[in-house]
Every structure is written in C-alpha cells, then in structure tokens.
Image (cartoon, rainbow, N blue to C red):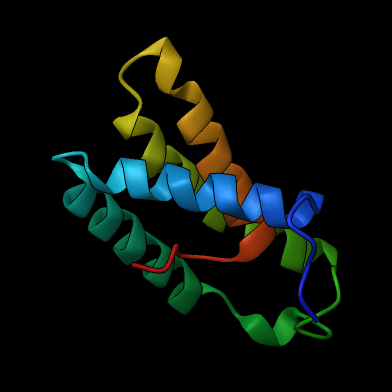
Length: 106
C-alpha cells in the first residue's frame, strides 16, 4: 500500500532522508557514523537479549536498551551540528532514527 504524498509518516520520512543526505556531506560524517556504529554494535553485543520477552513488545528492559542505542546515535550526530540553524537537521535525523530504525541506510 502506497501512502498519499501528504501523509504525515511519508512527510517525516522524506524530511529525515533529506536531513541524512545533508549530514552525509559533512567532512566528519564518515568518522562520526563509524564511531556510532561501533559503539552501537558493542552495546548490542553486550546486551542479553534473552531478557526481552518478545522482540516486538516493549518491556522495561527493551526500552532501556533502545534508549541506550538512541543515545549513542544522537550523541554522534550532535557532533555534526555546528550552528543553531542546523538543529532542524539534527532533530529530523533523530526523529528518523526513533521512527524508522538504526542505523540510517547509506
């Protein structure tokens, strides 16, 4: 099923994709992205996922894990925000991560 052009989910996804494309132009993006990916993978490997009752259900343990991963990615991307005007790129990127998964597709 295809979403209508003005669907809020589609608009959010398009804004987030544009924000990621803009952040990719930054000189430090590859380094920042790689560092975040390594940290997220280390956190993932260190997490006992058997404590999650169901991979799709939200439990306190699952929520704590997801917040740690979000913190890793948000902490990385905030390094790319140099000016107040760039905050919207950061926010769009963070919202994309919360709504559409980790990491952004490159």
